[in-house]
Image (tube, rainbow, N blue to C red; front, side, top):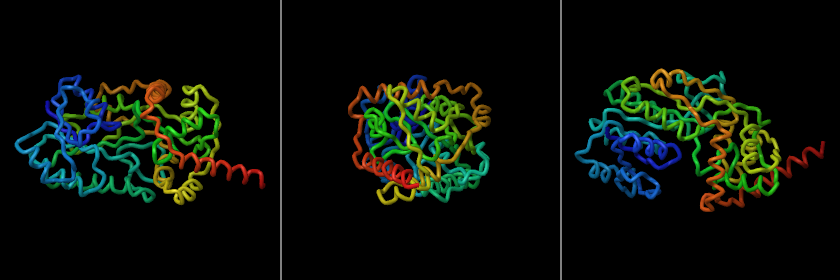
Amino acid sequence: MKALFIGGTGTISMAITRLLAERGWEVTLLNRGNRSAEIPESVKTIHVDEVNDEADVAKKIEGLTFDVVCDFIGFVPEQLERDYRLFKGKTRQFMYISSASAYHKPVADYRITEGTTLANPYWEYSRNKIKCEEFLMRMYREEGFPVTIIRPSHTYDERSIPLGVHGKNGSWQVAKRMLEGKPVIIHGDGTSLWTMTHNSDFAKAFVGLMANLHAIGEAFQITCDETLTWNQVYKAIANVLGVELKAVHVSSEFLASVGDKYGYDFTGSLVGDKANSVVFDNTKLKRAVPDYVPSVRFDEGIRRTIENVLRKPELQRLDPDFDNFCDRVVDAMEKIKNAI
């Protein structure tokens, strides 16, 4: 079986690439060649300076056909329109990575299924994902383009600690604050429900949908079955770091309003996503992939992640601007408390 991945080395896609290589698929990645040292030897790479250079990509895939093509890095409809032109007639299945953040916000029902309405007035990222889905499903209905839509939620790997509130350089600065005994910000009161999915579990479900006739023309969400509060997420991280969690709970709306001044889009990432309690129903996925059983509990997965991050200084990206932002917010909250 032959697969082409646009991207293929990200948080979600690297685990899939590795699993397919283990299972004997012929995998080709279409990307700039970043992280090439980490991909399995059997995986081929078509190097392109710019994936959006349609003429260059068309030339490099001329004469090639695939059982499955997946775009992991398509964010706006124009990119999917390009994919349609490039791969129409060249693949038996086209898979698109959308986002569970596209589900209706504010949440009308915390139980999320693939039938939940798509609408997110808070986050342009999510609205663009919806437009991409709409284009692809229209091509399926009108032209028979063999589409499968995938909606991940919060998927993590060994390179970055998954959190709710962090800066532009990722999550290391928050872990560093914990290690230094400084308070960290948790949005809301920390009791909203969330799901963390290890990328190895995601890969098992995704591979089960590849070349699966029941997946054509359908959308599937892929998440773990474990539900956590944000307090539990941060406590699990503190436990692995071996420190006391010093949490400061701050309203998501407050973070959104002050974050804008510093260039942080907490309106989208919090109000439009992580601040909402959601529980994902994977019944549809398990009908299509009966052997899918997520096996990495969060306390186990986060231990692997943190141990790897602590071993590798290159994954410890400092973010002094976000550190200063946290200090200012924590100080402001303390002043408010003392003023009343």
